[in-house]
Image (cartoon, rainbow, N blue to C red; front, top):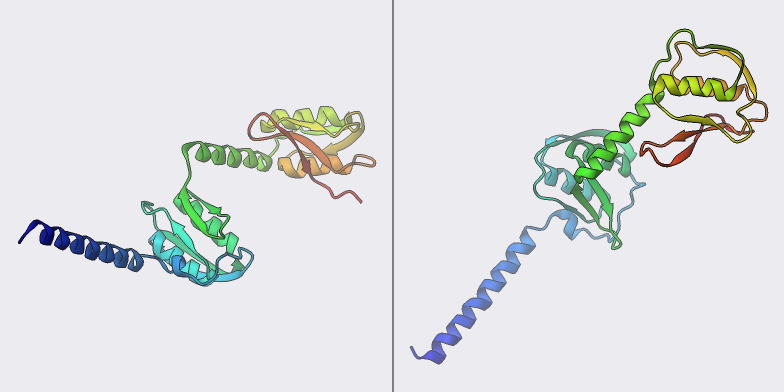
Length: 222
């Protein structure tokens, strides 16, 4: 066999290998990669009943329900159990991602991506969860006030809960009389706000990140 013949044979083998790789790649695509729809409607109501499924299997089924493309990080270590009936697709995504320490990303092309949380994202989520738990703390006995300023009452609630709570502008000097002993922080704040004349219906709370301050609405303003 001369050099020209050997060269031609090598080129033919390379072409065959490329075709084989292409076939393997197509056969390994999930249903979501081949779905007809180019976008996912996360408001769609779906039913999922899956127990201890591998993440890829779960999201293949989920993509079939949504008729959209979903790509999944291949090295998740946990399985997924989701048993939810007639709920929004976004709720199912949240439930599944919580079990995997994952997040979902809605891409500009309408495709969903499921990827692991970064270490920083995990810390932020934990901080948020701890922050929200403070609103369910039961206040101690002796939290009774008579003609006390709103500012002073909120300061006492802050000290008992570990939150930083301040009144809405112009409402701190108003007087309230109430007993909030044994209430959750959330219920106590609502009780305070309801006694404020012409209230805005909110208090100001230092956020979970320790930097920003946000409005926390307790009562809908009439």
